[in-house]
Image (cartoon, rainbow, N blue to C red; front, side, top):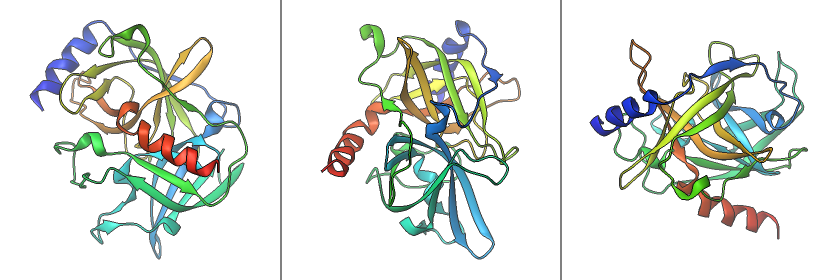
Amino acid sequence: MRALALAGAILWAGAARAEEIAVDADAWPYSAIGKLNVVLGANRLQACTATLIGPRLALTAAHCLWDVPAGRWVSPGAIHFVAGYRQGAYRAHAVASAYRRAPDYAYAYGTARPNMQGDWALVELAEAIPGEPLALEDHAPGGDARALRREIRRAGYSRARPQVMSAQGHCSARLDAGPAPLLLHDCRAVPGESGSALLQVEDGRPAVIGVLVASRAREDGRAPSIAVPTRAFRDAADAMLKAQAR
């Protein structure tokens, strides 16, 4: 992971510092972001964040769907997407009917896994969630995918504050070069926020540029967090959205 550390040093050299921002979970684009509850059994629940990219399709991190004690992937019926969640109330709710993940992704505790680019999942919902989903970006602006990208936003439900949505703005991100590129960014990454989408606004419209999967935070707070870029799952998402539209 030395390459990530070096790229992180370059990232912070020219990046603005991320900061907390106030958001309304019922106002778009944040209304497309929801809490992902995964029921593992009696009195066993794990939670992440997910983002609607279609009325019946939500994007999250694959490791959110792994049952660690049981050592297996959860069934779709155990996955619940809750939109507009706040203090026990919510705008809409749907159970998953299926999900798709990278076929070669294998869960491993921690962030030092060789297949981190496969840490994404597309969750098909049994019912449509009302409201406008978020779009996936088509390509990196300016033609240079590795350029420093500023004014990135991220919102989700952290384990420390599970009852309300929290968000950050003014983050920066850069694509780490390599055979399996990852987005290195300075948005916070703590338990519960896994699966959060990184959003960039272009011409007044936000688009998903990646999904948050891990933190490599050090004591000095200068190491980057990690997201899977949209390019890793764009084809799979397009295929699922096309099938749902039939």
